[in-house]
Image (cartoon, rainbow, N blue to C red; front, side, top):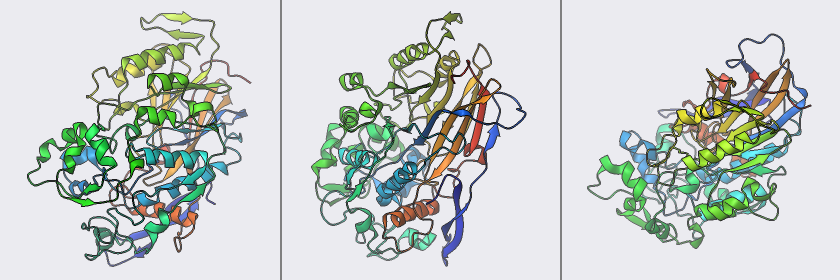
Length: 537
């Protein structure tokens, strides 16, 4: 099994004679932790955890459980990858996505196998999932995700007994990788990028299997792909009907106005089904999940914690933001998906007012909106913000009451116990300090973790601990799932997960050649800042 102390890197060329070689992966020594001190200045001496971690969690994000046979996916839009007018709509299809469930199961096994966090030595407290657990806002995708995380029968396929999707050998489009070979000759991925033939892969990858689930408590989060078609388009009544129906689009209609593509997809994605279609098997399980269905799915009898963080108020009000308290830390999960459509995030005034109240409850001292110091009888707790979207993407203009990112940052800077913001969405490892130039808070760290669906197909361990001398430290360590670096015959669950990662690494749009991995300073790091109050023992 791969551990947090190892990493995967490019291996040998496995296929030759193509425009771009297809590479395998090999295990290598893990990266050492980079100490980042932008919020403290230089630190003398070694940083060590005193008395274990105040919080130790696994951060997973952007799993993208995908119904690869859904009629309401628009994979053919990948033809427009070089057209800026379609940029926000892509990527619509990945060569590895039929194996997503196996990659997620491999990450669940890897997290479950971690006995102690690598820096503090503490056991993990919980798993934090920060949105886009599913890909296309569908109920069957949501059911698959819940079985993967809570345990149960996982059924990645949909529709009829035969595979009916763009990777089928007879599908009339060779821009997609066909693992069984194509009826019309070599597909683009085999011809240009050296992708292999793997006969029977789709049948094995989409077969039902039993998942043990996480043994740790876990908390959820609402992302744009839980809310919107392909994370961008509003799920209209017409689109909801098309999801469960039997016609799948394969191209745009003649005369389509490409200049209006994005806003048309945002408002009426069903308009992209007006061109030629193929008949597929209808499936009622593909119905839209909706906000109510998303929240309600987390309230299983075996859920730990109850509702996986979501509350009775969320069920009643149709909201998805909440508080979860641990021994020493308050976790505040925000809902940043824009119901008006578009991939970028937003946060409305009502939610920001709620956030300010929840912050005040765990501060003995803070700065109010007028710049005045407020002293309370409240007990201090460290605060970690969780959301799907990073701060800089909270710019969706389709929401009329969107609070600007700079205003939200200024709010957080008034509360000195906010030390960390965890998020995903951009499918990239990125760590940013948000220094405060005024008031009593020095600022906070924002840690964005890459996606499991795309390269580098990782999660992240996060440990917050007392580093002594009035310092707080946040250790971040990348986690590889237990899929095999060499997928071999691609038969066993670990081999299927290993091929998923290998395919992701070779994806010409989002693979090893892309910036998804981030720099060394965005992966294994120790982030420092002054302790905002005397830390609990």
